[in-house]
Length: 152
Ligand code: HEC
Ligand code: HEC
Ligand code: HEC
Ligand code: HEC
Image 1: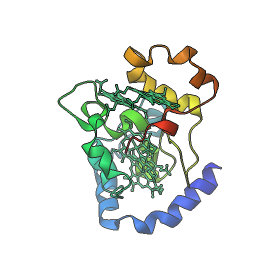
Image 2 (image 1 turned 30 degrees about the horizontal axis):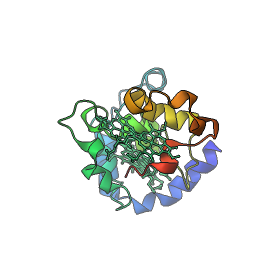
Image 3 (image 1 turned 135 degrees about the horizontal axis):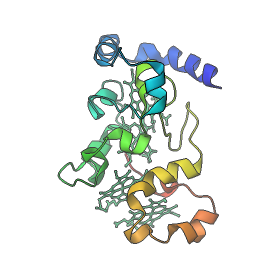
């Protein structure tokens, strides 16, 4: 699975700007050992800017104008690890085109399981309105937050 995914992504790579790719590899921390990458989350050093070198698709960029991008609110994803607050630390994705940490919905890259997806949202939304999510009918129906909420 991993191998075929990487293969599929390689095939797509020409779509990404080669010059930008070079920039990413230069700015990535080459000194990091694979062990260090495995043992602790390695967030993109430039945050969303790293992701946006490739993800310029109009299906992706509207998130930048959403409530989640409001950096003046310290509780938002963009005031924290930006894209990776939701998609999880994704060093092997932006460096070597393996799967990002968390994939919602999915397409070419298969979606993460629903519990993993929802845990990412609930890391911020567990209190307040979502306090009773764990015992709600919706959870028993196995629904992903992203099946109802459009985020981008
Ligand atoms: C070097 C280019 C590049 C960079 C940098 C990059 N990506 Fe990607 N990403 C891709 C390609 C290519 C795909 C597969 C095609 C697609 O789904 O757009 C992909 C797929 C994804 C997907 C899955 C889309 C789906 O099918 O549901 C997510 C989520 C994602 N990237 C998030 C990120 C995040 C978050 C970052 C920054 C930490 C990032 N990407 C950085 C090239 C890149
Ligand atoms: C608040 C959580 C959240 C944040 C922040 C976020 N995403 Fe997403 N992302 C999602 C969800 C949920 C989806 C599934 C589609 C949707 O709901 O819009 C998704 C879908 C995607 C996809 C697949 C889009 C497609 O339909 O092909 C890509 C690529 C992606 N995100 C990249 C990024 C990048 C790059 C950033 C930062 C600029 C980012 N995301 C910020 C939650 C988030
Ligand atoms: C890093 C924290 C964080 C993460 C992760 C996060 N959110 Fe949010 N979300 C916020 C904050 C902060 C707001 C602004 C309102 C508030 O303060 O509660 C918000 C607002 C919302 C709103 C209200 C939107 C509106 O227009 O009023 C919805 C719905 C929502 N988030 C769903 C999600 C979903 C679904 C996910 C997972 C894909 C997610 N969030 C991930 C912090 C987060
Ligand atoms: C079956 C569809 C559905 C699912 C699944 C779902 N929601 Fe919602 N959610 C709604 C509706 C409908 C509302 C109320 C209308 C609105 O504010 O968008 C809402 C409201 C919210 C709000 C408050 C929005 C506000 O304006 O204050 C947040 C935050 C939220 N949901 C987060 C989540 C998270 C996190 C998950 C997953 C754990 C989730 N939702 C799963 C349908 C859903």
